[in-house]
Structures are given as structure tokens and as C-alpha cells.
Image (cartoon, rainbow, N blue to C red; front, side, top):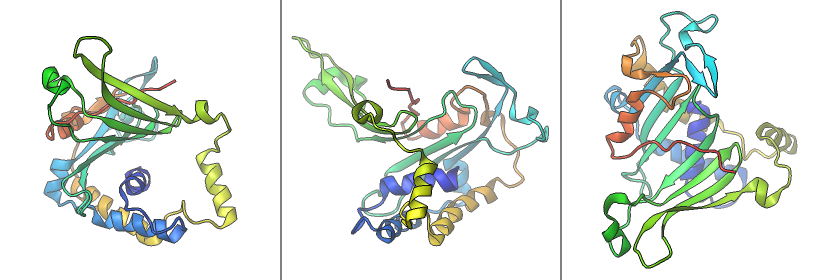
Length: 259
């Protein structure tokens, strides 16, 4: 999931604008982005990457066994079912900006989304009277399910008070366009038949992504999971993942289904 899906989404979100919409122009920029991701030493993996494994819990009212109780799984398996990463991209646009990625099995929801959190504005005017209550503005790109885009910002409540609270503008593709949206693999098959390579990764892109992931795998080799790396099925991940973002003054935002 990290090598194939998460890094693919990261490269598309953070890449520079291509010179054209031709397949090679887009893939060139994706490779440049992946090669700009700061390499992780074994010490960096300890500080910036968290793995996890689920134990027995409940998902959507249904009891789930722990990973080690699954068929054909060793009772002392250290295979990760959850990964969270903090990455940095060393180029002019993204220098110093942390990128947090996470993926896992047996979480409360099966969903994919990208959340861009903007820098907090100076505490002036309304913000000065609201103190630290204001959340930073955020743009959320919901990939699946219920594809859409949400913009979250702070708005003044109508009236004579200076109360400000978060509000959201939401675009739902299903509501707005109403037309049938092809499934992801359906789109890929159509593009393959048409000879359009835009959505397919190139060899150098695969190698660049695996170079990042291989360093992480080597750092974890022969290391047992700690208690802080286990999480109950039906929760959003281990405590260690919460600590990862808290070190930077952030917190994970739990996805919600928008209707």
C-alpha cells in the first residue's frame, strides 16, 4: 500500500505542474517528486515511521479476530497491518513541510482521502478574540467512497457577537454530476486499450518508490512489535501513530462519510 498507493497519491498531489497533459510529461514530474523525498536512515525510521498490527476488536458492530488469530498466520507474527509515515520533500516548494501518510487494515472505515492543512493565519481581528480555538483552514480531496472535495474554513456566526466557528463547503461528484463514474480498474482497462499510459507507472517511478520503502523494511527487519504498536480492530491505529503527529503539534483527522 505504501509503495504503490500512498506514494502514488503523494506524487500526484505534490508534483510540479507538467508542461503538458501528455503521459510522459506527467510521469516525469511524478518521478522528480519521488526522487526529492528525503531518504530515511535507520534512525529516521525510528523517529518518522510507525508500524502497527491489529488485535481482536469490533468493526461496524462485527467482531473481528486479531491478525495473529487469522488462518495461516504465525502466532508470533510481526507482519505490519498498519503504517504511518512522516516524510519531507527536499525541493523549493515543499522545503520544511511535513507530509503525513497512513494506511491500515480493520480500521473503522474503508476510505481514501487527501487533506491539505493550510498554515494558521496571524491572530488578528476576530481570531485575536477567539484565542487558540480556531482551526487552520483545510482542503480535503475525498478519493473513495463518495468522491468529492471539501473546503473547511472559519466563518463568523451572524449577529452582533464575534463568535467564529469552522464551516465547510462540500462538492459531491455524485450529487453535482449525477452521471455514472467508472470504477478505478474499469478506467485503467479502458486507458490500456486506448494506449494511454498516463495512469500507469514507469519503471524508474517503481524503482524510486521501492528505494524509499526498502530502507524502511530493512530497519524493521528482525525487530519485534512493541506494545505501543498494537491497535484494536475498529480503531484508527496504535498509540505510537498518535505520538508521531503530536511531536509536530498536529493530530490525525478522522475521515467522515459526507452525504
